[in-house]
Image (cartoon, rainbow, N blue to C red; front, side, top):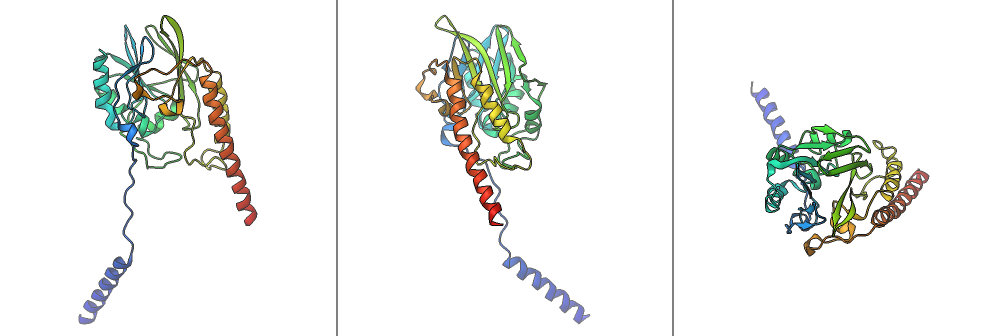
Length: 295
């Protein structure tokens, strides 16, 4: 009996020693927002029926019609109260929002969609690629894994590439531009400014922050997707460009002034993104060739 007890005590001591020598478990990761993403600004009128209601660094748009309103993107999860307050400031009650649209399913743009849908009762419109990620709250992202989670939300209606979404006088056309995410989208519509028609394009991010562009095991055609999307963006009807991160479109919402009309803005936006992409793609391909040669 004594021998058995001694063996048990020695085993427990060895376990304690092993635990003492083991490194601590890693801290959980959290998605950190940049300061401008959380900085409220006053709503900015973009055109007669289109308003910017987001933060200094993350876009959210309002389109007002006699039949109700449309909101595009929501920013970080904590932005929902600010957006609702901005709607009311512009005379739009939450229950009059009919549709929620978005650019892509990352926490810094889709984070507030669940709360907005709950508070407004609006239909969330998306595509199949984004709907999967929205329902999972951003988990198993193809580039970021589980590092940029947000409140999950269910999509109410799927749209197809080139489909037109109508609400009274507002006619919005969706174009799929996969790259930044497989479900990235651009939305275009017509409005007026100074009694003149203006074609507005809200174009998703064309960036690739830390992405693997060569030999991606889950996105073997990522380079083809980006290049095709650059071509789509170049040809969008686009007198006025808006993007999810305003600084990427050379505009500061904190100025209080609407972005200037520039009919070549979409082409320049795509050309600049394409040049950065091709440089990064070439560098990754060369690095991969060197690595293979070393073996």
